[in-house]
Image (tube, rainbow, N blue to C red):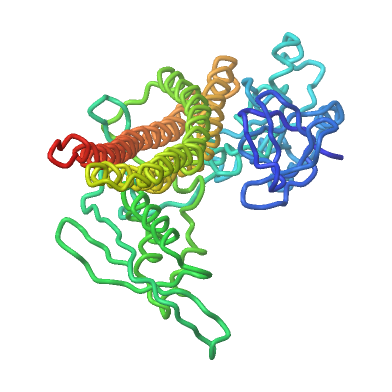
Length: 518
């Protein structure tokens, strides 16, 4: 049976490439979740079938799935033991509403090992929980004791990133001191990543076509030079498949330096292995990365924020405000990109055409004047012919100008339009964490979990919130630097463009004001 999803954010897909155009609030019938690379296939109403980003939607329950969720089942990971009284282990229950607080259905408290079980969801006739109001019973599972349990929607970013098991205390992997990630207080008083002590930049240069296996496989090799504050480091040689043209070299360098500027990613083994590994070392590093236990939620266990006190109420408000900002940013980036593209077309089309048309009529007038071959008219005729040539040059300058101002700006806009598509996942993760905080608070008030368990959940949620806020801080500061550079580069190029036009016009005008030549 096909699943149904609700659209969280607008997405203007490329319909020519099989993507959907969806709007916030639309209901999509999900037809295929195995497309890969973060894409699903679905259909809005009776419209065309197409692709859309998985992170832009959330699955919703139909009447069929709701009724199915009401039937108790035994979870394979936590089988219910025969003796519920002593072991306090039971089935795992999912709730219909992911965002409301839910009571767990088990007696598993702290100190029962890595996994916590659940008691039966059936309420005994003399169970005091049977006196709960309909509202309470709709968001809790009956039982004297409980534990905060898993969401019914197993497809959200909160679950798939491993954040949920981290918050529930299911993550056992522990890193070394070298793996520790520290969050500090920014000058603005918000969490930020601790700056990397040895920042570096990456230069990608000298592409060269090569081949291996007697020419059966062709690739382009390039030089990667790492430069730090201590000076230029060694040059490494890597490969990039297909056609490594200049544009791709630039994009690879932009990407490499963006990673290098991230305080956490820049010191990742995987990133440094990508930059520095030789062909002989590549497979060994790949195998090491595949065995890395500090992935997903386990990575969160390496985060520490000793100097940062997290106010979860303020944090929730700040992150939600960031979500509003990102929606507006996506809308305005898309509008700006379309206008810049239109301006490029105007510059190489109508604007250039108008100058060329002006040149043509002035050239015609000059040809007419040339029929009068008196010495007195010669200088004017030459000045008219020169004006026609200058107008042609100015038209050609208009056609060439976008490569110096609009196209570099479009590269930045396109990069950010791509980057911000991952941030709905960050918002979903933070909302999921806040939901667990509220759920644990409610269960603590009802006496279903003890103070220690609620406190541990709060502490782990503070880690998640600190990570989200630190990443938001990094994004905002990167955005300021990038758009400052984009606008300055664009304006400098336009100033140089118009100065060149003014210089050409002034030089041409001087040919008409010299009385000695007339």
